[in-house]
Image (cartoon, rainbow, N blue to C red; front, side):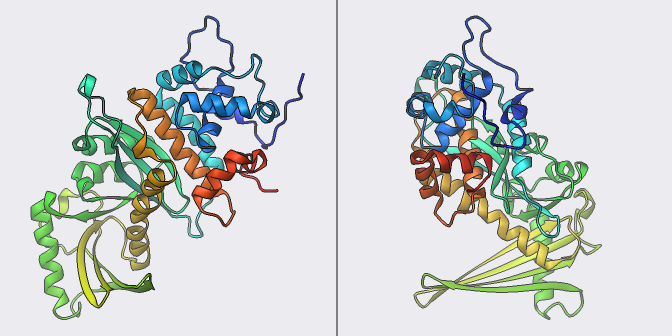
Length: 382
């Protein structure tokens, strides 16, 4: 019998000790943790569904036996499929959350920046059952590059109701939560404050009176460069790829006269971001107003705003380009959701590895080289 190798200080089994096994107890041949780890490793190595996971596991059986028990060999793709279709999504995520916690490293000031955003899996529609594409709302730890939780909805329009649910799955104490304009809702702000976090929310047309009041305030004080109020300011300039981009971040305390101020839990400051971009001799500009429960600290405000863009540029873009998520034609809803979660966790593992290579190249190497896969999986380097 092969001796069990424990490459981690804590056995990977501990992370899934409380995961309810959704499979029938009759003729159950494979250990739950073996199925979970093989599913994750397969996705890490390039698999896009149960059949590909089985093919990868068969090819890597020798390596897998160094880390897993495999009392009855490699499971069939039907076994992988049944597990991923039936597993409780929230229980699945809670077990991975313990693993995520072991990977997370605190920032120098201890502030965690959490971006909440939705993504539609464009080819997951099921016309036969009159189902549109599945929409996922995720919480992304921007500076660690880790997805902490996700909730699936049938429509993008359900995102407002999904946001409070996904926030319930994450510890918000000491965190700064950023959401796009759709999430600028009083109930969502209240939820974040109640759970010990802070928020930075862009103000747009979904809050007409608030938007008008905030824009009027900034218009008034921009005329004399904030001579009558205290303002915190940060300016940045970046140049590359033939483009010059300048950003000015302004933050002020909320005026006592601001309309509907009391309706927003914890509201302390207003923010303004002015962006100008020069490309090919042409200049374009954009102005965005924000409300926030943060104290006046322009550096932290700027950091939060910039970090929110990373969920699109780093997480969603990578899922589409490296993991080909938008090309997935998996139709079964629970299977689609489980595979989406495995892709997000795999992305987080790849981002933790210090190799100076693209994420796409890291994923390829993980598929080719079992030693590199071990480094990624167990957060170790040789």
